[in-house]
Image (cartoon, rainbow, N blue to C red; front, side):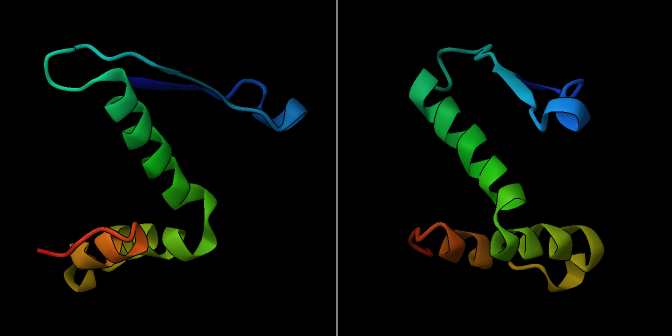
Length: 76
């Protein structure tokens, strides 16, 4: 579970994030950290954010392979 606390976003340009791994048998702390950081990277990087926009606004043209390419992961 990831919670974003945006109360300081406007005044301090800061968002606090809290993450809790609820099912430790499913993800390790390091896997959960990687997952959150990777998801955030799609909102903080202009090129990656275009994939988010395509997913939300033009889903029929969205290709998950593009996400894998952005992450330099193998495409199976």
